Every structure is written in C-alpha cells, then in structure tokens.
Image (spheres, rainbow, N blue to C red):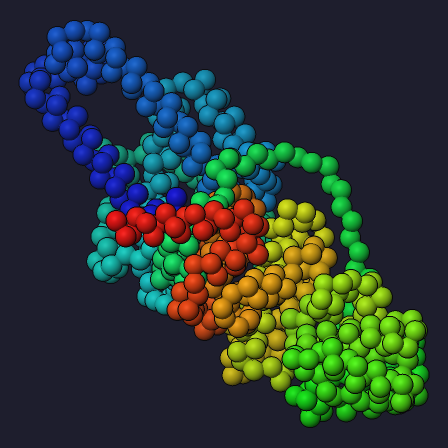
Length: 625
C-alpha cells in the first residue's frame, strides 16, 4: 500500500469499527430488553451478545457460532498486536532507541525476527499467570497507548508549526483544530486513568507495571545514547512530495507508458533463495583524489614517459587547469606538446591530426584534460597511433573536468571495440578542476551518476563491493547534490558530490551497467538529439516498473534516498529531479510511439519493446473506440 493511502485506510478502519460496534449495541438492544440484558450479564461468562444471538435466531447454536467468531477475533487481535508490536520494536531499533539487535530481519521472510520471538514468547507465557495478571497487563498497556497517542498529537502540532514546508506523505487540513481535538481527547483518556473513582483508575499493580516500563525506557535511553552516539533517535525521513508522488508515473512517459512498462514485467512472485557469495572484482585503474592534486601531475605521471601529449578541447584549453598541469609536468622533467582540437563531431579525423603531432614531437604518453569527449578522443588517438606507427599503445592518464566521467574507467572505443590497453594508468580527480561546471551540468551529471549507481545496485549480477560503493554514493548525491547546484556550494559538500560522481562511473564500469552509453544507443534510434537530461524522464518510470518485483532490494534503495518502501523509489527520483529543475516529460519533446519502445528496449530488452508496442496499440485502439 502506498504511503498516501495509509491515512485514508486508518480513518476508514476507525469509522467502520465504530459503526460495527454501534450496530452490535443496537442489535442487542433491539432483541433484548433491559431486564434480559441484566440477567445475561450475571450469567456464566456474561456473554450478552451471544445470548442476544440465541434470542434473535431462536437457537442456542447461534450463540455458540458467535462465541467461535469471538475466539477468532481474539486470535486475530493477538496476531495484529504481535505484528504491530514487533514492527514498533523494529522501528525503535532502526532509530537506535533500543538495542539494534531488534532490527535484525529474517533472511528469508524479511520480518523482524528477534522482536517477534521476544513478543511471541511473552504472549505465550502471559496466560499462565491467570486472568488478573492479563487484566493488569491490558489496563497498563492501554494507559501506555493513550500516552503515546497524546504524544503523537502534540508532536503533530509542533511539527506543523515548526516545519510547515516539510514534505509529507499525506497532509491533514485544519491542523490546529484537528491537533487540538486529538490532544484534548487523548489527554482526557490519560487523565481518566489517573483520577480515583473514574472507573478507569489503575490499581497499584498496574501502576507498578507502568513504572517498570518507564524505568526500562529510561535505562534503554541512557544505554543506547551512550552506545550509538549521534545515531540515537535518528529516523528514516519519509519526506515524499505529494505532487512528485502523483507525478511518478506521469513525469516521463505519462500513465500510459508506466502501465506499459508494468505490463512488461512478469507477474511471478519473487523467490528469495540464499546463494553462496561468488563474484570477481577488478578495478585496474589507479585513482588519485583530492583538492590541489593537479599540482602533483608530474610526479604521478612521470613513470609513463618523458614526452607528454596533453590532449584537450577548445573550451578547456583556455582554463588555468591546463597550464597548471603542464607546469607540474615540466617541473618533473617531462617535455610537453599540446593538442587542443578535440571535438565531438569528427573524432576519427581529429585522431589522425593528433598522430601527426605525436610523430612531430615524439610523444610517448598522453595526458587528457577535459570531459568524456576528451577522454574518448584521447583513447582514439592512442589507438590510431598504435595502428599507424606500429607501436605499443601509448599510456593514458586522465584529469577529468566533470565528475561524471565514465570514459575514465572504460577500455572501449566509440565503435564498440575493446582493448584493455586503453584503460587509464592514473585518473587524477581534483575537485577544484571541476568548479567550472555550470549549475545545469552539475545537476545533469549528478543525476546521471545517481542513475548509474542505481543501475549497478539493481543489476542481476550485482556484487557486494559495488553494492556498498553504489549505496554510499547514492546517499551522498541524494543529500548533497541539490546544494552544490546552487549559487554558493559548500566546499565539503562539493568534494563529496565529486567523489560520488566518480564512484558512479567506477561501479557502472565494473558491472557493465553504463546508463549513459545505453541512453546514447537508445536515442540514436529515435527522432531527437542525445542529452543525459533525458535520464530524469526515463529512469523513474523504469524503476517504478521494476520496484514492485523486488520490494526488499528497492525498499533499501528507497530508504537510502529518504523514502520508506519500494513504492517511494520512483517518487524520490522525481522529487530530486524536480529540485534540480530536471523535471520534464518526454511526451513534450516530440517523441513518437516507436521512440518509446526503443527507449524501453535499451533498458529492458527487445521483449520489453515488443510488449510496449502491443500495449500502446491496444490502448490506442481502446481510445479510438
């Protein structure tokens, strides 16, 4: 159930419960008069409603039927309290308010196993202490519930006043009136338990239980705060913007496309089977990260030659970074020749020109400074030089000027050919080299890096090391990306976003899930130009289609992004896209039906594309009729 429906379900269930009990009272009063009710109350067990059933149907059998139903009701209530109580303990353990051992989930069923075992054990033992003990437990527990209701109502009013702009899964209108009523009603019930002679007053044994629970809570508080430090009382922020949630299936392709993608997925339930860990991890590229590291380029690169060809483009050529890197190279005794003619239009011709420069200067290794296009151009130059000059592949070293630089960790060429010799020897990542990125470039590159991390984390052949890296980067990008896309980016946040962007490129290369390349492949078949900004429109819908098939995998992803359940994944992506001003609709960009199918194929395979086409045709026929 989506979070937005929970409030309505709760209210509906309360209204129906009140109506149900009111009808029972009416029914009993209709078939029995006052004296008959009084007699029934004094009878064995005092089961007035059962006696009323016997009167209404003229048969004692119906009284037994109702008693059986009542027993079933007790069992379901016990079950609901077992489930609810264990989830409450799980939530408190997740917030480090009680020992974190109660946050452990069962390997197969993903239920809070330790909390269930504890509550289940206490529930089994409790009846052996007799009816009086059960009454004391119930009464003391009811008092605790009323106190909790009152605290929630007070918290509701405080949060609405102090944090009016907080994104909420659902929002109550007229909060002052509703909050005041909730506080007064729950507070009244609390007071009734405390006033002598009210009929609800707790007896000494029940006050003893309340005191014991209170002391236990204080002890847990001190213990957990001392043990878990800043984690104590932290919580999962279910901050999902209502508009973003409603737009989650509509932002990219519209509701029709969302339905089409859902239709592609199999309806077979997910089966969780524990498999032995088995994977391989290879990251042969050396990464040197840190502000100011560009001044160490000479020391880092001198092991690969004495004559460097510095490759860049016209936009980067005019920046200080190129001069600073070249200065460092010269100070290390390396001669430098510059080739600043990389463009995205004719890389092959550009590579031929660069080979002439290599012949002229005798360059023996390459230093590429720039974005992905520059890196791709440098690899083409190295390949062309090896082919033309009959020599080994020239060592490549990269200094990226954008934090989403997948080409740094990829050994393939634009034509799809692969040569491991094209892997960089050193990737020098200096966050100061990237401050020239525009606000839009920061947003687009950051969102692309986020998509690569999500793709790597949810890949069928995902592995523990890339999972850990991806989740770390997702957490950073979700938390810091919007801030660094503003006017005054915090330096610490900026460096973390750069790191997360680089991690995105690394895990996508390691898992082979490079969304930027897939996007180019998909867009090449369509009628519009390529642009990574399209990821903000495509990925949320694909994630929405897949999330329901693995709620635990996508649930963890959602919580990393500030959501709660797998339903929140697409909504959180839409929420972030909106905050980055990347919220667009592909439908508004002149995309045709076949374009949508081709885009789906790039992400979900040929079978998906055919299903999308069939779905679209069926929907079009239905619309026409």
